[in-house]
Image (cartoon, rainbow, N blue to C red; front, top):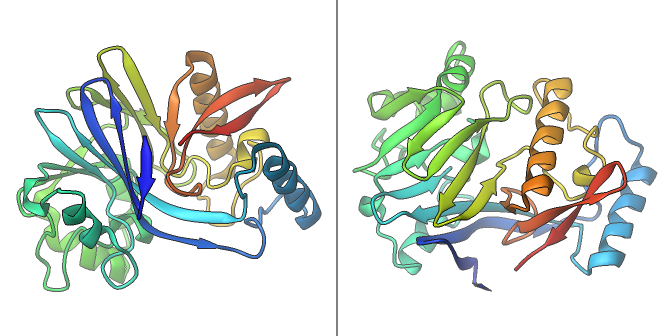
Length: 269
């Protein structure tokens, strides 16, 4: 696997995958968690960096593309052309926008949906079926703000609402991951005995692997989010799954190791 200029190619069995860095930056300190002191977070991040050499003060927006051979699938659409690079990176990686036939929205926070539609209300991926969970759609469209109106409701006829659990295309299955938002999903991607768990925003920072009870101010339901985090971390560790994330430093991939009664993030590039 290699990561060059925001384009990271890898395989899951026969599936050709690309991680695309829509955006990334170095921050002065790790994220602030509601229920942990700044000193606790800084110490946890420093211990992680000392042990792994992987800077814990880097944040990213990592967008997954999967070519199953039958379907060409994009997972989330990032910050849009004014603030993100996805629409330039896709053709640079040899992926035409009109070749994508499925766009999966893991949840509808702004940094996941800004490139779904253009400013004239046209879908950026003209041949794609857009997929979102019914719980997520109901939550965000009940009292839609400007972003939801512009990026989801203008192409409402393109969206298919699906349950939070079940196959979306052959080899890509939704797993419920509520808490950060009510209808967020993770994805299990399987081909020829190999598996990738894409966790979306189940955790935003590596230290949440060791401290899954820590949560952010914009988590909709922190208690449920912690339960989702624990469930998926346990699954990843128990099954030895390769894990991809939306916000850990590019390419945002690693494995989860059991450490005592908790876990540790081991980056993989």
